[in-house]
Structures are given as C-alpha cells and as structure tokens.
Image (cartoon, rainbow, N blue to C red; front, side, top):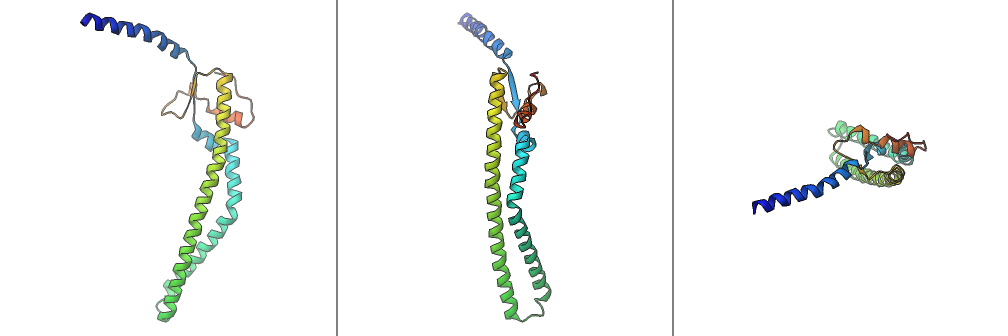
Length: 173
C-alpha cells in the first residue's frame, strides 16, 4: 500500500508540473479600482459635476443650520427672562424646525450618495471596458482588481487611467 501512495504522489506531481509551468508563463496584471475612482479624469469630472449639481442645496442647508444655531443661542440666552408660555412655544418651534432640518439633511445625503454611485458606476464601467481592451490587446491571461499586494511590475492602473483620459498607453512592460 505504501508503494501505491508513493507512486500516486509521483504521478500527481508529474501531472501538476506542466500546469504549474504553464501558469508561471501566463501574463498577469493588477488594477487598483480605488485609484481609478479617485485619480482618473472621468472620476474627477464626475466629482465636479456632483459638486455643481448639489451646491445650491448644500448652501441652503448651511443657511438653515446657521438659523437653527442662532435660534438655539437665543433660546439659551433669553429663556430665563421670557414668559413660560413664550419659552415653550419657541422651544416647540425650534424642535419642529430642527426635525425638519434633519429630514432635509438626511434626504440631501441620500440624494448625494445615490448620484455619486451612479456617476462612479459609469466611471467603473468605462474602466472595465478599457481593462478588457488592454487584456485582449496585450494578451493578459488574467487581470485582478484589487490585491493585498501586487508587484508594481504587474500593476496596470496607470495604463488604465491614461487610456481613460484618451492618452495612448505606454508600451507594455
């Protein structure tokens, strides 16, 4: 039985060696999507677009926040000297106003997040198309997105970013 297991192990090693050698000769690349979403021109344009799109609402929320702060300061300063009924009315109005402000703020954040996801989704789709084009034209066997560590020699993120900007990619390394 011992001879059979040694023979089987030897056979497995012989069969696995060519597969390992073929894999070792394959062309591998890595892309850091986070860098593409942060540094590429399409991503920066999307960010600017969102800033312009939401600037008015952000300014309005800022004004309301300032007004809330002034009202709160007034209440704290004058609450001791104002009549009880007036103070209760002002506190109730402040609380209602504050709840409305928080609702608007939450809606704003949700809208910004939704639009950011839409815009960055388009950037990622463009990046994936370019990654496939590079993989096909340069005969990559596999390109990983994100890795805990990758040798800079196989990192093609800069090549993808340049292609996204319409610049011709540098010669393959």
